[in-house]
Length: 248
Length: 241
Image (cartoon, rainbow over all chains, first blue to last red; front, side):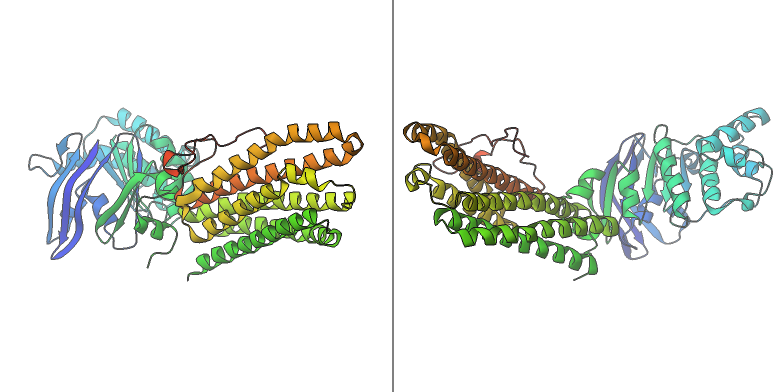
C-alpha cells in the first residue's frame, strides 16, 4: 500500500532522511518514534507531499502509494492530498461552523450536491466519534469545541473526502488524557477502513495504537518492526536504549 | 545512571541479596541434616521469616516500578523475571526450612546414616545447591550460554529421586520399626527434587530476562547439550511451575 525506496531528503545542505526504505500494509497503523529532529515528521509529510511547500529542499528515491510513485510529474497533488489526509499536532479548525469545517473539502473539490454533502458530513463526524457531542450544534463555531473535540473535528474533516491514508503528526500531544484516550480509540476504529501513519513522542501511545513501529534517529530508520517486537525485544541496541530511556 | 536505571539496579540488588540468603539457608539445612545439628536447624527456621520479608518487599517494589516507570523491552523482562525469581526463591527457602524442621522433629537420634548415604541425600543437596549457585552466577553475569549444563543437573536430581523409592522400600522391609522416620526422610528427598525443579524455573527466568527466549516446556537445544548428554526433555510434571 505505502512504500518508500531509498528515500533521501535534504533541507538545503542538511541531509534529513538517509536512504529509507520501508513498506506499510493496507489497514494497519504504523507509528514513527524517535527523538526530536530525527526526521520522523519529515518522513511522514512525504506521503502527501507537504514538504513540497518548503523552499530549498531536495528529494531522491521513490515514495509509492498503491504502486504509483507520488512524486512522478503526472501526479496531481490536490488529488493526492484528497487520498492522503493529514491531522496535525495542534487542532486547526477553520474559522467556520462545525458543519462547514467538515464540508469544506467536499465543497472545494466539488464532490457532490447538498444532500450528499450533508450525508457525508454526518458520516464523517460519526466516524470521528464526535456526533453525539455536536449533533445539536452543527452550525455553531468550531472554536466553541474543546481541544479534544476540535482535534476529532479535524479528523472528521480529513475523513470527509474519503481518503485511503490518514497521516497523524502527534495528534494527541496537546490533549488531556481523556481526549487522548478518545483519539486512540478512534485510531483503533479507523484502522478498519484506513491506513494510518502516526508520529508520536509518547512511546506508550505507539505501543497501544500501532501494529508496526519505526524508530528513527539522526535521519536514519534504525529499526522497523512489529510493535510488540519493538517494545518487548527490539533487534537494535539503539532502539532498546531509546525506548528504555537510556538514550543520550 | 538515570533515576529509572538506578531504581532497577536497586531492585536487582535486592534480589541478589535474597538469592545469596536462600543459598545460605539451603547450605545450612544440608549441614543441619547431615550432621544432626539441632541448633543449626533452629537457626534456619528462624531465618526463614527473612526470606518471606524479602519476597513481600521485592514484589511490592516490582509493582511500584511497573506502575511508575512503565518499563519496556529488557527492563520489562527484568521486572517480570524478578517477580518469578523471587517467588521461586521463596519456595526454595520454604523447602530449606521444612528440611530443618525435619531435623528438629527427628532430633537425628533414630536416623540411620546408611540409608541417608544409600539415598544419596548429600549428592542431591550438592546438585541443587550447585544449580542454585550456578543460576545465580548466570543472573549476575548475563552469560547464559551455559544454561543447559545447569538444567541437565536437574535430570541427575530426578534420577536419584526415582531410585530412592526402591531403596527406601527395601530399607523399610528390613527395618520395619523405622517406617515413620523412613517416610519422613523420603519426604526430604522429595523436597530436594522439587528444589531442583525450582532451580530449573530460575534458569528459564534468567534466560527470558537476558535473551528474551522462552524455554518453558521446550526441549533443551542441541547446542546446549554437553558431550555426555544429548537433548533431553525438561521435566514438566504437574508439580513444576
